[in-house]
Structures are given as structure tokens and as C-alpha cells.
Image 1 (cartoon, helix red, strand yellow):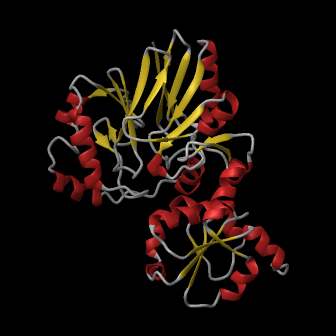
Image 2 (cartoon, one colour):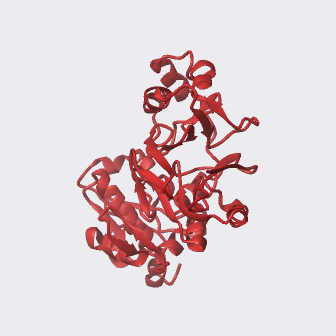
Image 3 (cartoon, helix red, strand yellow):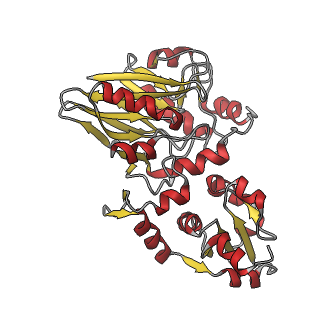
Length: 364
């Protein structure tokens, strides 16, 4: 067997490489985009073939290297099915196994709470906890569908039920720690060892932490495995699996999604701008929005759309129309499908996106 822990200083992210030396098949957990050459060099040095690039969650503090590793090394990317990362090859579920040769298997453990889609992975006596359980701490719970009570349950009922000698390898550390154990975290973790569930919830809900610096960039990018969203959607040479089990190119995936949602033309949007029953939402990135935008549009970047849309009071009326737009109409189509899945009944995607809007409004 082969095991290596790597550290990215910029984001304090811990990345893990696991391999079966007999078959030379390897997996990487939580790779960072800026460190991709380090990973490729390491794999080449030991003659390893990367089979899986796995994510513990959709990260808010760095951009993943999974998409680029897939492009360069032909590995499969895996993200929790609860993360809405439609372009990942594998939608990970509880107890899924990732086999390396005949001798090694990594098993997924659903540990929501830090985010709705947080996963941990266990391999032999090593537990990779992402941001769910940290050494002497735990991940925050105030964004991306996080919930303090859910995190407490994930840690105390799932992770703390593992053998005491299980080694804990977190997704981050900011104090120079690299490994702990289940017993150590049970006894010494200040957030968990002495607090009841109710006390833990109160503490987590009152942390008042600053917004992650890269969240508006990292979250949407990581939903597309770290590749620019429009580029990922248009990259027709990448095969992607979805819940149907069929292999689709990304163009085919978007085309399929567009058959399942309703689209509206820019000219129709323009005629509806002043209607009280219309909520227009710009889901582009901040730099795109700051250049120019459609008048009266609410701004909710794709990375936070699902988590902040209920802040718009008008969406609570099911009769109102929610119109989404991005740059080209691809991101908004996928976002419309996501909101529909959440239960919103009247969601539209503006075809052609803001580029089409500008063409129909040359004065902009």
C-alpha cells in the first residue's frame, strides 16, 4: 500500500494520496488546483495511475484540481450526490466503495453538517474527515446548507462510533497538526468533548465568523470540479455520468436539462421586467455582474443561489415567476433544474444568457 499526506500553505488544505502498489491504482482526496503539478509529479515518481479524485465536499476556500486531473490523467471525479455537482463522474452516496486493485478500498461515510453534502472517507485505519471533524475543532455550519445539529449527530453518532484507535486525517489544519485519533477527539476536542447537543448548536450558531474570502469564486467552480463553469459545460470531450447511469458528454447533459426546464427569450424577459410577479436573478460571478447587469435583477451568484434564494421574499409566493440568467444560458439552465428539484414551481432560464440580452439591447 501507499499513503502520502500533502499540504497546501495558501489554503491550509490537507490532501491525501492512497494507492495499491500491486495494481498501481491510486486515489486522491481533496486536491488543490494550484498544487496539481505536485500531484502529477508524485504519481509519476511512483509509477501510479490515478483512478479516482474524491471530494469531501464543495469547498469554499480553494478551487479543486479534480477537473484538471480528469483532463490530464483520465481519472474519475467523485462528489457527494447532495452537492449538486452534476458534472462529477460519480455522485457519491453512503457506503460507496472506491476500489484500488484487489487489495484496497476506500468507503464513503455521509457526514453532513458542515455542508449539506459533506462526506468522510475511511481506508484501513485512516479516516479522512474533510471539514466535518478537525483536530481540536470542527467545520463551521453557517453556509452551503450547513446545520450545527446535523454536524453534531454526524460526528458523535457516526465518526465517534468508529474504533478509538482510528486515525483522523482532517481536510484543514491551521496550527501545524497533521493527525489525531477518534479517542483523542472524543476526549480533548473542546467543541465536542464537553458540550451537549444543545450547547454545541448554541456555540456554533454564535461564532460570527467572516465570510470565506473565495466563496463566491470557489463554490461555483468546485461544483464543476474546479473548471470554469461555461468551459466545463462546453467541453464535449469529457464523459460525465449522471444518475441515469448513462454516459453523456457535457453538451448532451445540458441539452437534456434544457428539455426538462422552461426557457424564456431575452425579449420576453424585457417585456416582463416591471411585473410584480417576476423575480429576475443574475447568477453570474461578481466580476461579471459588476461590469453590467439587467436592470432590477437580484444578484445571487451560482455558488450561493440555493442557500440564499429564500432571502428574497417574493419567491415565497408559488405563483411568482423566477427567471434566472447567466452569461450564456447554460449555468442558468442547470440552476433552474436545481431550484425545480428543491420544489420551486415556476422557474425559467433566459435562453442565450446575458450575451443574448446585450445583442437585443445594443445600447448597453
